[in-house]
Length: 133
Image 1 (cartoon, rainbow, N blue to C red):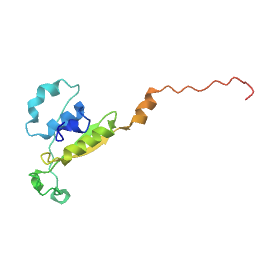
Image 2 (image 1 turned 60 degrees about the horizontal axis):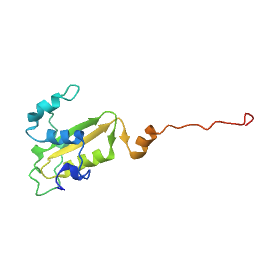
Image 3 (image 1 turned 30 degrees about the vertical axis):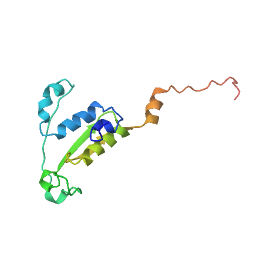
Image 4 (image 1 turned 135 degrees about the vertical axis):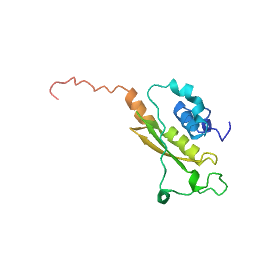
């Protein structure tokens, strides 16, 4: 398994959401427009300049993206929830030297294994057999 691939975080599996975000960070991401057109809903791309006072320099000295002008911040919003593994995968992408992008994650819910199982289990209240209790 290649430790530079995003599937390294998932032990061989990478979800579609993280793969799309990885393609988005690359310069030629518009080449996958036919794939994006298969996804439901509208898409948009808005580029905003970060004020100089709010910019930070990457800590990596050897990084080719250590220049302040190359810094990118991407807002990723997950409707319906995000798993801790997806958050870890985005952190992994941000730490790669060729990434050059910081990710801000917004979500409606963080899904853990316990919260997922709680939604799948039907809680049944025991019946009271003694009417005087």
